[in-house]
Length: 56
Image 1 (tube, rainbow, N blue to C red):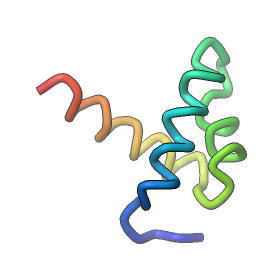
Image 2 (cartoon, rainbow, N blue to C red):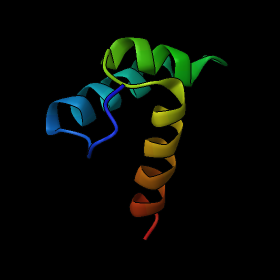
Image 3 (cartoon, rainbow, N blue to C red):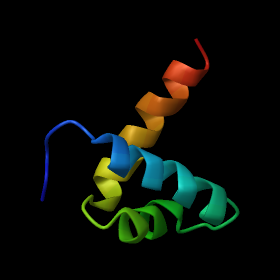
Image 4 (cartoon, helix red, strand yellow):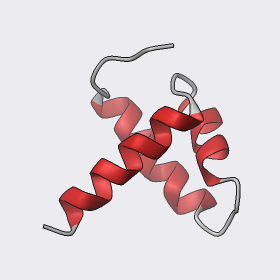
């Protein structure tokens, strides 16, 4: 799987998926499927970094 920095398109799809699937318990898996190029583990890592930046 792709391990480089997230593209703008991937991040945009990540945000769309967050809005769509936030109430779900299987969020990382669903976001991964929606983005299409990232694993659930990569999604969890990206989400953690994204929310840390938001809270600064």
